[in-house]
Image: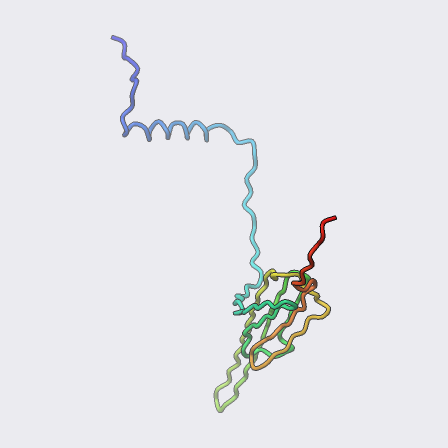
Amino acid sequence: MKKKKKEYTFFWEQPLEQAKEIKDLFSEPFEFKFTVPRFTFPEIRFEKTIPVNVAETGTEIIIKAEVPGYKKNEISINVTENTIEVSAFRKQEKTEKTKGVYSQEKSAGAVKRAFTLPAKVDPAKAEAKLEEGLLIVVLPKLYPDQKKRRRLEIK
């Protein structure tokens, strides 16, 4: 008696058939080389973001950024026609010597914020000032809003 080939498979037979197919795939010799990349880990610095308020007038963009505890020489501002980047880095060392106890603590902190401005500005005329932990950057617009109207006569 000849065995008929089944026209159906039970659900518990399917994984076995798939396993056979996978075995057949991997039994063929590979023609490519697989190499594991080597990773080097650079110095990791965790940067926080700076809270920023952006206001726009007809002639300028005013940015107020909170950078408490940072001095003028620790803050860097880079401005292009349509972007601004504010970053600050602080490194502190504290050494204590008392009777029988010696300790040295080091801490570093970095904050950064970069974004696209709502209008093109003139970086050459930009101004910044630091007042009690609040950095105020005034960026004059390159093309101030012109709200003058002129009625044209049709010829």
